[in-house]
Length: 589
Image 1 (spheres, rainbow, N blue to C red):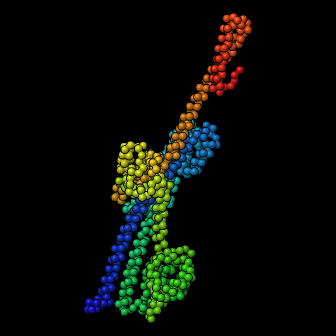
Image 2 (cartoon, rainbow, N blue to C red):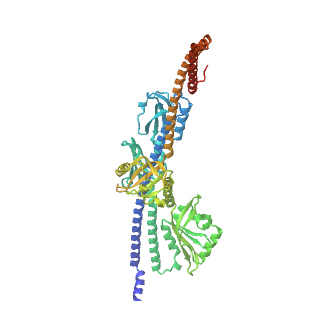
Image 3 (cartoon, one colour):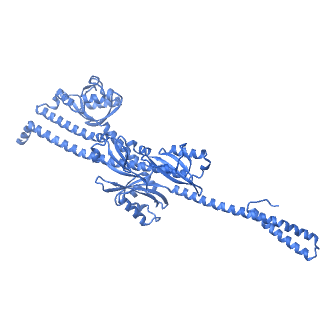
């Protein structure tokens, strides 16, 4: 009993108040430090992920435009020699369909300009297309069937490629883009954070064109992400201060039922949180300045107004009656999230802690709530979720591999491509799942050496689906580095190009068949011409044989010889008819 009495006496001293407040402040600072470290780690991960997504999107955009130019160069239906509407229409279609394609020109085999889009009155030569920082020149051979008809030159603008991949990240991340050590683009304010949190990614458009991109979080992103930690610290310190005040009030022998409302309101005025007290009829009896600023109302507009009608119009009458019945019994939800409607009609999400207020007789007179606005925090979480969902919903198969080539994650497109369920893929290697015998071990060793050195590998290979069918695949394998610069994972982007390969094979076969047919027709025409001339020689032979037979005695040897000549001539004539028929000629007399 003496120990309990001593403890009670200690609890009403100022020393207890100082010790309790100091302990809570230290605990608040420790929680703040841990949350701040966690947020910086999350920002660094988001920065690295954004850099990878932006870089790969740039590569995909560029490769899409490059492949479009290559397809344009292979079109057999376009006759550039006529300089007709067909070529211009196709060129205009490709330029409008692919904003990255700025200009398209067709040169003949002598490197003279045949036609271009957009059209120009100035003479243009192939050598004039010098590459600038803002453009990339691509040249493809153009064929007419199997014959080289010239060269297609496409000018791809770098800025649309960058804008398409970077636009949705512009507010969150700063970018610095270099091409051949020359600065192409720099966005945002590269403050002190850029020296501590940044990620550099190499963008490889093709073997001869690449860029270096550095991404760093914007001040706005860091500020938005740090708001929860700052709010948590403010919240904890406010709770510490409130707890200290409550201890001080208790030390002055104020029971909870005798709480001095004036002092409580003065306390709530000082905190940087929403604070409000409400009577049992739902009328607001007190609100602090922070709540006025957050809702857009003045204290005169808030005090005396119905809380539910003014700030919570979405709450039904039935819910209101249930809430007040529980409040009269002394029951209230102490911690909850609530959406309020401000004066301008916008909605804000608050996290609130509430308590029941009683008078000196212990009767319920209302409730008090204190809390913080988490609207921006929820919006930031939603943005990160959308970014993650976009990666999962990509049309091309994407997988994240560890250093042992085991699949750590894959999107739905990947599982559709290879035909396996996620549970069959995660933790296993592509070698065990889809590798075919179309490539030898040296092929895969070269890939491993390439990405292990930090370079990006891309190329075509033949893989095997779960059902055993083979398919052609274009894969890009990119190393991912951790904060220390060491390679920690690989990102594989896989695209099924089976139909594209089949179309190329069909075009090649059709071209070969067309060439054989032309040769056969040429031989037929040659044989027909020879047979026609031979037929002209046979006409007098058969005719003179007939005349000889008319003049000779049918029983004589001369008559018999003329009959042999005529019979041989007629057989030769029949053979000539067959040759002319196979050569396509019907002009027989």
